[in-house]
Image (cartoon, rainbow, N blue to C red; front, side, top):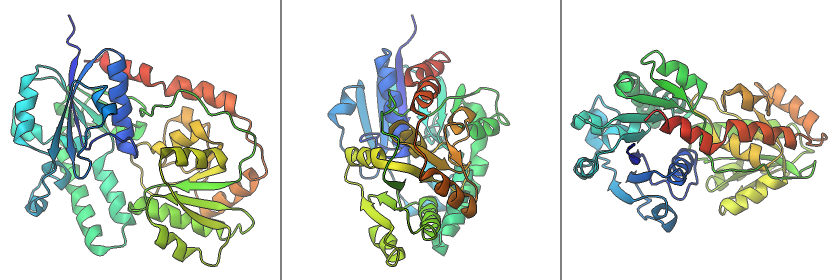
Length: 369
């Protein structure tokens, strides 16, 4: 009889599922649970130290471990993000239940440096962290942080040789899949888990262009700056920049541009309302790493999505989006789309519910256990 228990080690507490990485973790756990699997969840946290009823409902046990942010870890050859996620209790709790161990991101794999695990080992690769931190370094304006991100990138570049030690790796994008293939053939591309089950039915026109993201992240801040510069040249069309942070920074940029507005995101329902009223979702990234979940949510919950190639690399999803790669192309596309009704909902739903079916994609993972 198949063992239907799984240890999942998460880089953060996945509830609430309110940012990219934990959205994938939470809805993967939920789908595994719905398919009859017993989940022993191990979470490293910095601030999210509460176990919600929603998480309790889909897991057998939730263990919380405070991240150890010892500054001396920066001197290690192992990346700080990995060194900070280890606790002796994790070893004891894994040993209690004989079950496969599913690592959410390379950040959670310090356990493999400490003990010889007899359990089967699987990895969900959320990013190629070496590329992610290289991009963070490139986008960061603070020289100290730029320096730290650069060296974290170099450490991950060496550390990722561990990829060949897993029974299987599940990549989040084709870019990561192709890179992992240089280390091991035991890799499968599995799209992001997201929790959407239908495309929102909307009228042909929305009211504005829309960008949302965590403006504490250098890449998002750089993207927001780029888009504000774009809309300074389209003064007749409104851009809303939405985030739970960064209000003062944005408003300092837009004092003389009444067509650009900052809105503080209050909660998920508020974000969904903003998406439903948007006509063009404008999104870009300056680094090629992972799949940006804001694209997926915008496709399910809004109208046109205008992106660059760094946002997602699944051709089936890309064909649902409009593409621009330069400031001039973004301006041209916005001028084209602002007066064009959105009429692609039926085709979009057919593609999304085929490619991004959480249940189908969970079964791809579980069949390899």
